[in-house]
Image (cartoon, rainbow, N blue to C red; front, side, top):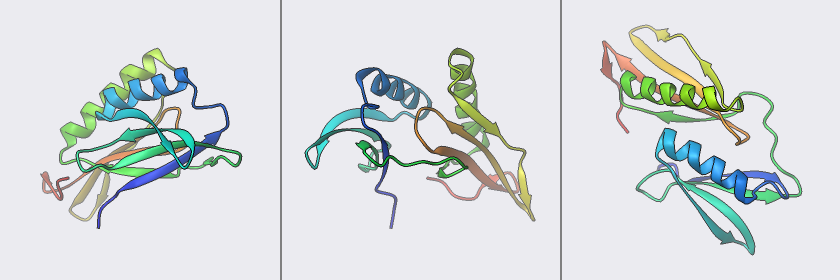
Length: 144
């Protein structure tokens, strides 16, 4: 089994041209995702293609949009600390230009000999992304 897609819903009128361009610019630069418009069930939606396997995040409008006031998130696992730190550096560059970029940088979580390096980022979408790697003895535990 693997991740296929996640749908995020927004208030009607949110997914205008400006919003979609801002989402695409950030998530393309930080994560390499590609945004495209498409019709789903008779409604114009926006899709963020997240990888080469057709995985995506679907952005759609709804009269009952999702709300996530806490730390609801989607975890993104990287192979190395350097990859996580490079993503964090990009997020911080964006944050310098746009105060809507929210970052939570965490100290390493050490559980026995397992070390997790992580930060959370949120920008325009109603959830956080948990960007992390796990190492055991300085070596990656799992590669994507």
